[in-house]
Amino acid sequence: PSLDPSSKKPSCRAPAEPDDKPDPEVVITDNAIEVLAHLNLVSGSRYQKSKTSLENIRARLREGHTVSDLKLVIDVKHEHWHGNDEQYQYMRPETLFGPKKFDGYLQSAIRWDAKGRPPRESWDKTRPRDVNSISPVQTTIPRGFRG
Image 1 (cartoon, helix red, strand yellow):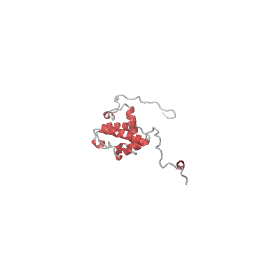
Image 2 (image 1 turned 45 degrees about the vertical axis):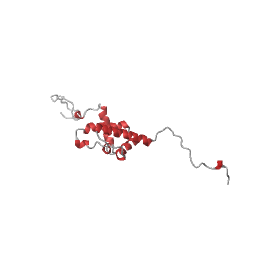
Image 3 (image 1 turned 90 degrees about the vertical axis):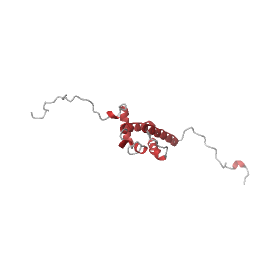
Image 4 (image 1 turned 30 degrees about the horizontal axis):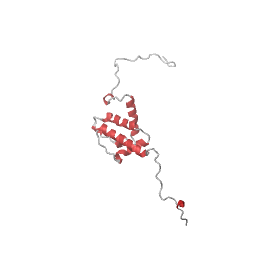
């Protein structure tokens, strides 16, 4: 056997050079915590940074949704449900960010945002119109019909 130490492989590896890129999962978790903090702020809740509270938020972020998307859903559902205890009980992470409901909530939130985020009270109102105005009646007989 050779006693030359240069022929031996080192038993421990040198630490890998940091690549300046943060771990994507750490970024997702940090963003999820930011979204959860927004939910707590808007709703007055105190959801903890637990796996259960963060899992659906993290899943939506992994799908490519932004923190702004998730915060927008929180804002629209708060506007939609506040003042109604029956509905407001659903202001929780598993309902807002669950895979079955989130896309629908996001679409309505985008429309709400595009309209300037009107208050809930104005959502059901119809445009005022003159009930006495009558559209002109067409009295001509279309070609091909007997008159």
